[in-house]
Length: 353
Image (cartoon, rainbow, N blue to C red; front, side):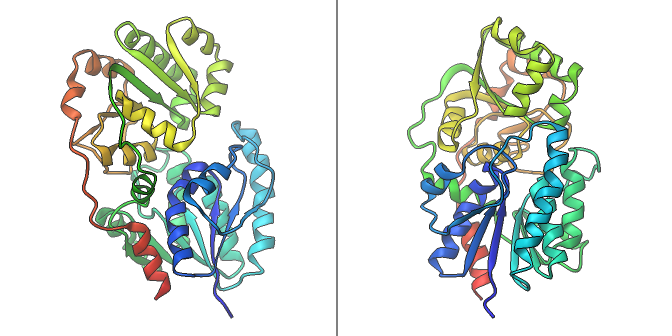
């Protein structure tokens, strides 16, 4: 019986990180499938085309933006039972799940209930604080306990997974996002514009608390007196800004409000700004590769990429204003990293053998 390798994807960010692995599996002719859960409403077609992925995608449901808590709660049981129905046809296969999203959680539970192995990509990351970030840290801890093979980007992540003796540890020497950046030739001809700030926020603790979101808006308005602010809006962020009456305030205060972009365009645009303010883990990893000045709007991060080099953690919006206005961020500019191995190839070689 052929053991299949089934990748389950819910978000664009996951597909961007999994795409180079799929390409390696195709090159080595490993029997693979990938399932789209439709967690976000964005089409994945452009990413599939960009990476030249030939493995046919299996969509479970029509993509829909689940930007409210209620919508997510309704989506979860639906997607869970659909995954059970499909995965029970592939018993004793390898089910690849990525990161710490709700798709990751549902796929992991469905895989275990149908007698399959869980391969956790980007495994071992932890903030060591149960509710920060929420719900990602809770999801990670559940997935860790179910993992059969943990693909860990760093030595620190691999060390953490030793707490879970059931999991075999595969150290991938970096995140697969690096393979995506290299393959797509991102940042090759990007020029930086002086006094520009790109902002990208989506985490629960930043956008689902009105007072917190208001303080972030006030920060951006203050910074806009001296800097051009480019605020790229995640659908959930836009919805909360509108709900709290903050979207119009931003529009009236010289803030450029931009829709979410395709991957290459977004990252090239981010690199053209002098500094980036983000709460995204993928952004942290990507910008660390380029040595690009980055402020992470969080108390803690489960990722070590760039910390103490090109990136700094600042949780208080007022402190970000002080940091930027004093131009301390200029010391964060570092050299681009030199890659010596391919994380995606390490993963493909492991499963080929």
